[in-house]
Image (cartoon, rainbow, N blue to C red; front, side, top):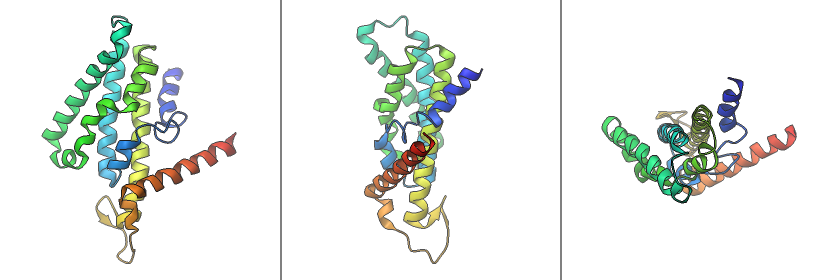
Length: 197
């Protein structure tokens, strides 16, 4: 059980997709304007990671090597379609806010990278915990980035005004503000990592 817990924690800390592997920055930049959007995208990506990792690990031995990437994309696209249809049915406002970035999970380098680098080589249970850990790590990164951007960029958090006298830094609501926040957080985590070593 300890090895599975390590696979889960690895995606949150040691191999965090956003802050360590620096993957999936396109949706991170686009949807991290509010915490609700960050949580929605994180849950969608986690579901796709979890489902595709498990299925790819199950069928890895019957897929011919020369067509593995197209097969992986079909599996991933199936879970993205399920996610998108569920989101349209039960949370149309969130679906509109996330826009094209939900269907683009199909080509998200986090999902395809985990299928290629991990799920096709590991057991189903290890792949499940890896997908879950990577998804939770991505979600936590999105929450942190979008929390900073929403609080400082609009003076609100989860739709509530923090203080009426605060003058928001509107640049943080722009894509350049997302790059600034991500860059500062990457620098901060690198300093922590270097001090630890």
